[in-house]
Length: 144
Image (tube, rainbow, N blue to C red; front, side, top):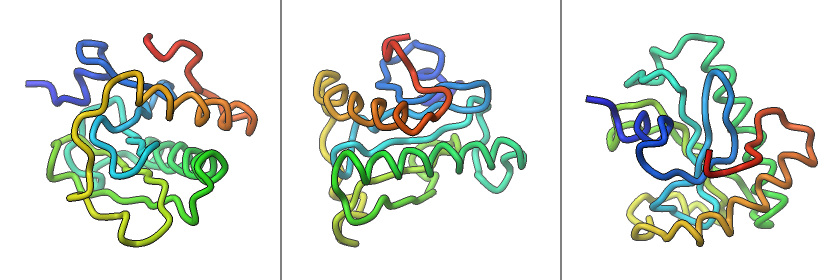
């Protein structure tokens, strides 16, 4: 059975996308720890990040880095936290989280499911920052 992320990537479930390319996608977490919390996910359904092929792994981290830089610009955060846990969904994903303190890196702080309009409000400036930085793969139409 496909993971929830595979279903989001396929368009079967809604997602608020920042980036799409041949190797991976990035979209906002529906249960963000802080506004703008993004997930970077390989298109291929691979359970553990240690099993991700090197080229895909490198692309995931390049995308996460670019999103972290955009988050720092957009949200004025002290840090863009990065974590890979993988217990909640058996499909590798990197959490990129705007943070002002280490306290904000706790998953129990995750918000209840956010409405699409609220997620889009936090995605739009991140996409703009990624475009200004010349990052490739930024989505033009977040619904496709």
